[in-house]
Every structure is written in structure tokens, then in C-alpha cells.
Length: 255
Image (tube, rainbow, N blue to C red; front, side, top):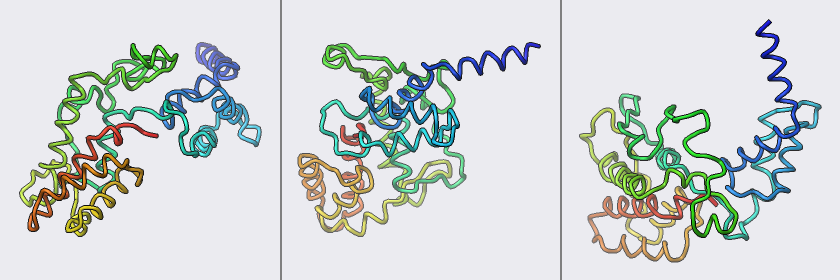
């Protein structure tokens, strides 16, 4: 029957030796780094082939192998290690860091596809919003490396993403008691307790958004920005520092 033929075809593809490295590499690209070493891919592909209990294609074991691999856990030594975050994941990362929520529970942000170059469930094809082998012309392509997420990063989406983050931080926060019920409101009240001390404030926000790995340069700029606001404007200190870090290259790149 057609159903039997389809099942046989899928089993044949699933058993093909190219499937494990192909799937493993793309999962590594989404979770850890755009340019994993061949050895990293091989280690994960082995787990795809056998999870240790004779099971092939155990995605739970594969993801565990990806995230616990030495190449994922060690401090990056190569400049090309890491990946550009998808703009939608940058936005949801900001929301998650602060437990943002909409009063009506809808999270109905309009026009994400135009603003970010992507939106939930709106990929233009089964191949995602970008191709795994995309290499922007210039330094990256010349080095023989790829940066898939940069296929949707251009002048328009970069500007629009920054504009959206400006709205998310300055307009949709719980310092404003008159928010619309569908605004995804960020609660910065926890950071406001540290606002009197610019250094402590920057540390607190960078811990939330950057895992504490803020560069000396960004820290200096953020502390100077906070210090521009006098006593009595602590809420503005929090918003300005959060916006600066959330729109920084350090937040946009996962390393």
C-alpha cells in the first residue's frame, strides 16, 4: 500500500549514514555555534546513531550531547565561535529574563515578520527563515565559514529590531500603570532596588541578559549612562541601562 511504501521510504532515509551528521550539525548550529568543528559534529552524530542503549535518533540524548560537549561548555578560544541570535529569540530572551507577561495573556505583538524578518509559525518554507549554509560575502565567506542567521539581518531588520526593543523597554514596562492589556509588560522593579549604585545596577542587568559576561567597554558605557540621571530618576536609569545592553552586539551574539 501507499502507507507501507511511505513508511519504508522514511525508514530507509532515517537509516542512511548521512542523516546523523546532517541533523547533528544543524542542531549544533541552532543551539551553540554556526561553525562547529568536524569532531564536535562526529561526537554528536555518534549519539544520534546510538544513545547508549541501542536506540537511534533519540533527540533528547542528542540535545544533551550537544549542550554538554566540551566545545559547548568551554570558554570560547576562537573568534568565530558562537552564533548570531535570531531576532525573535533575542526578544523572547529579554522577556524571559524579566518574566514579562501581557495582562490578557495574548502576547499579540503585531508585524513581527516585518520588524524582525521572522515570526512564529511563519517560515516561508520548510527550510526555516534562513539556510544553514548561508555565508555573508566578505570576511565570513572568505574564511570559509557560515552565519545562517545573518541571512535575515540587514539594514531594515537591524533598525526595526532596535526600534522594537526601544518600545519593549521604554513603553511596555510595569513602571507604567496604564498599559494596554495586550502589552507584554516587563517588570524592572527588581533592578530598581540597585539603581542608586550605577555599578551594581549594571552588574544586576548584565547578569540577567548576558550571564554576567559583560565586556569592560560595555560596562563602562552602561555605568556612565546610568550616572547621567540624578537621584530621583532611578527608574530611568534602569530603563536606559537595560535598553543599552539589550540592543548591544553582546546580547545579539551567543558565545
